[in-house]
Length: 176
Image (cartoon, rainbow, N blue to C red; front, side, top):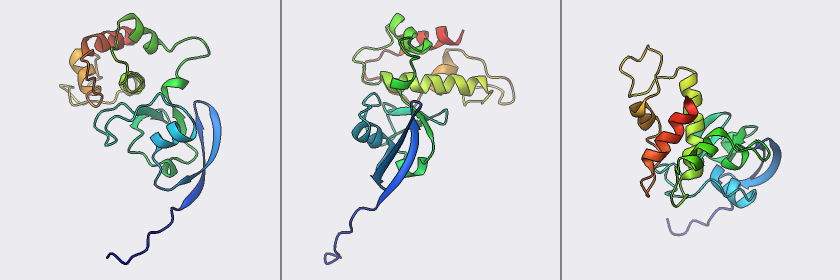
């Protein structure tokens, strides 16, 4: 076992769109989407919290669906459309969820905020599409957004500061 020589990283060319802009990069096949965004593109909004998919600080939208960027290999998302917190605003106009987070003080230290907001954007889209959750009493019924539903759907995003009541208020206001 100890006499095996280390292998050189395998580099591949990938193309993807990030926040509407096309990018072609050469990356190691082991590069996570989070590291690509932060280290190769300088987009530091998505945070590296646990690096194990447990905290949600790295949540981005991949082809419109929320995902933990720390668990997503960049090479698996060739030609994907990736939206980060930096891409949610429309020019100088904040996304409605970004505005609501500010208005409801849905952040304290701010570390989890980009992931919380990207996850909420994806979650509200899932709700609009009629996707059920574990909080739904009747899976076949149209999902209704209430506090329990929001908590269940956002359960993969942790806020160490405990700003949950304000995050909930921001999401509920945006959804209404």
